[in-house]
Length: 340
Image (tube, rainbow, N blue to C red):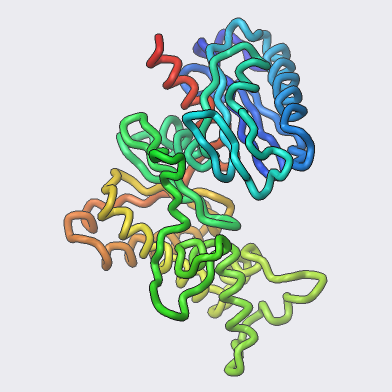
C-alpha cells in the first residue's frame, strides 16, 4: 500500500457513471491517483442504490489507504446522456433507463457529506486529460473520444464549455455531410461525424464494402461469421497484419475525423486536439496508431487556414479509462478552489 504521506492533500473523489460500470477513484491535489475501483451500474435499478454503493466503495478505498472523509474536500460525478448541469439533473439517458430525471449532484453530495460537481462524462474525461493527461501542457484543448459513438469535451483556461443548455461539445453530432445520401447517425439525423468516424460507423462501412457486388479481397471475409461478428478491433488487427482493405478503412476513418477537426479548429482554435476513447488503433505504442494519427494531421492540414495548419497539434490521450473519474475529481477540485 502506498504511503499516505507521499500524496498531496486535500483529496478529491471522482465518480464516472457508465452504462455497464461505475468507475470511482480518489486523487490527491496534484491529480495523482490514490486508489480506484469499479462496480456494475445495474442500469435498470434505482440510482439511489448506485449512490450508496459509490459511498461504500469510496469509504473502503479511503480506509485501505489510511484516509477518511475528513481529508476529502469535494466529489465530482460524470454521467452520459441528456442532462441539466445547472440543476444537477440526469434527464433521459438511453443506457440508464432507471435513472431518468434523477438529481445526481444533490443525492451524491448528501450521501458523502461533501460539495459535489456534475458534468457530462465526456467533458469530465476531457478535464482529466487537460489536468494531468495528454493536454496538461496546454491552456486550451479539445478531446474527441472515438468508440461506439464520437464524444468530446472542450476545456479553455480551466473551464469546461458545457453550453447554456448542458449540450456543449456534442462533437459527434457536427454535420460533416449535407448530401442527399449522407449516412444516418444513431441519433436519427443524417451526416453527423459520428456516422462516419465512430467504431460503429467503420464497421458499417466495412460490411457494406465486403457485401458489394464488386467485392473486396480481404482476410476479414474469412474472419466474419454469425459466431464472430465484425468489430473495429478485427479491422484494426487485420490492418496491422497487412490487410490493404482494412488499412484503407482505417485511413478513411482518419480522413472523416479530419473534417470534424478542421471545422472545430476554425470555430474554437484550441491549442491541441486530443484523441481518446477505445478506438485508437494501438495509440502511440502501435505503428498503426501512429499511421492513423499522421493521416489525421495530414488530412486536417489540407482543410484549414495555413496558420492553423502550421500550428496544428493532435495527440493521443494518456489516461485511458481513468480519465472520467480523474476529470470529475479535477472539476470538483477547481470548483472547491474557486469557493475557497
